[in-house]
Length: 110
Ligand SMILES: [Zn+2]
Image (cartoon, rainbow, N blue to C red; front, side):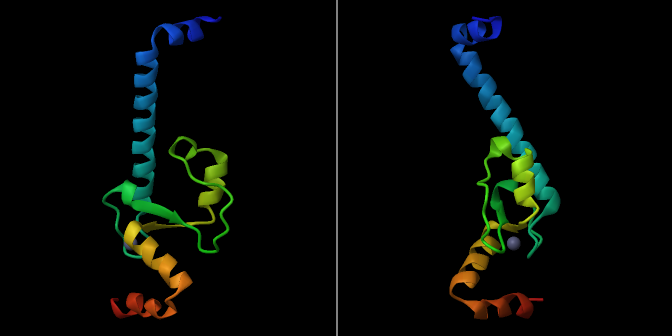
């Protein structure tokens, strides 16, 4: 057993804590990145957790996970997407499925 895995075995709480800290930090970075772009429909950029990547062509090859967000697979996927806030994202999906008339909403409100 090498020193790192020995340490991990002897300090399970620290391992858990470190992993949590890493996840929190990474999530903050993801949120920051999303806020720097903002919703492509309405401009919302207050909270990254409410911003989601939308696949305009439904061609989803990769499911985003916070841990892999800055990896090459996720970045390639992001290149195919537009960033929308949760509200616009839901509207967009409803429009794609059932309500093409909702397109007027965007034009009327401008
Ligand atoms: Zn929006």
